[in-house]
Image (cartoon, rainbow, N blue to C red; front, side, top):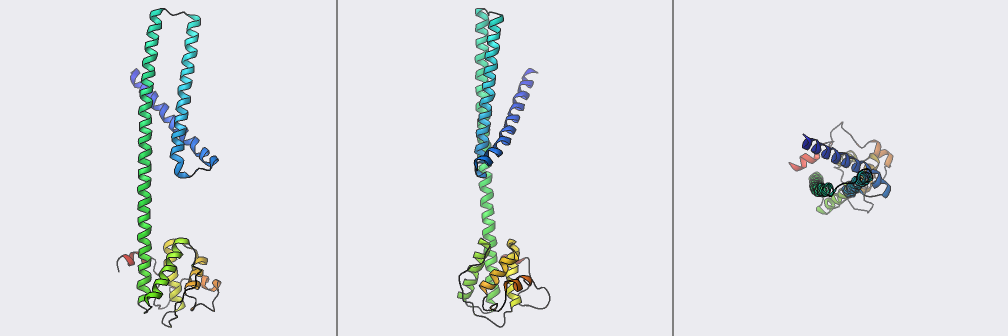
Length: 250
């Protein structure tokens, strides 16, 4: 029964210590301006500091009790020997528990970093696949209008910069105007891409004007922004929210 109580108390202390360490680590990280990726190390440092304070308090308490015991009752040699043996055994047990807890923390930290690394790698793969699908959609779209490979390459680079940096590429490019491609189709094309990345209408309008300048030389950004999406009528490039899945399965 006592062993169970001791185990329960040990776990309760560890849980409280971990919670305190987690609570303290956030304001410490904010105060020091530390990046979020360093937060686990701050948590471990706070945990170790709290454990040191805890064991220091235990040591001080034991020392005070020992002094009080000596003051009120002078122990015999056998009692002193028994007490020393008991204190040594307790100390050894506490050291062993600390080693186990530190190993558990190290294992938790390793697993956390491993899962975070896997998540970031998976996220990077998904973003790359998404970008490749958008670029393939761009190639397929403009090849049907007989754009040259050089022109398609320039448009793809503008699209890549647009979705990666969330702004239009300011370098002048030369895309020859075709009468078979309307302003509405080009704005629908830009909207389809911007929708995949939740890019604002203002930035999308800048992309349209900068990339397809010969079509919109006499237009204003405000006019383009107000009519980015057209679903009525027949147009060579239609509004489609699922261009990524289509590009994956042409």
